[in-house]
Length: 141
Image (cartoon, rainbow, N blue to C red; front, side, top):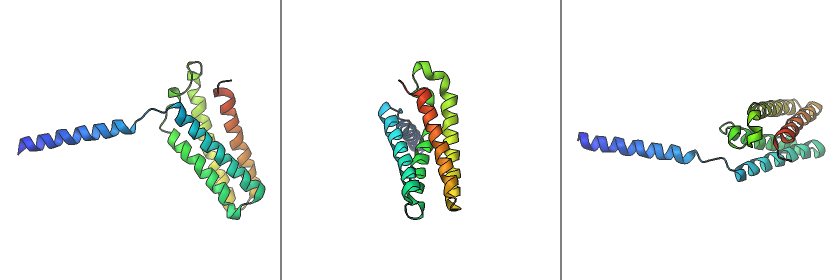
């Protein structure tokens, strides 16, 4: 009985370790490019919502949610894993841009609920500045 329990415990431990290891796959360049495409498409949706007034701001909400889903995913990625050696020092900068972008998106959605489109447009501009700032500093020329 104890032997069976020990084998079961060992099997369960190995299975759990394998599952946890399998979930922690490396963040590849292809993953990063896809995340950036998703974020760019989200910004385009927000801009379309501002310019063309999609019904009940659904474009703006969808765009912000798409961007926030990438930001949530990036919370678990260490910027040091994908920054070039010359950019390794800038991981705090990248994390700060991520935090600020999330804040502006949250404010944008709150202002959308209040139907204050001027404030939504202002927060979109601030979010765009965060994107631009990060790309100018961290992307290769």
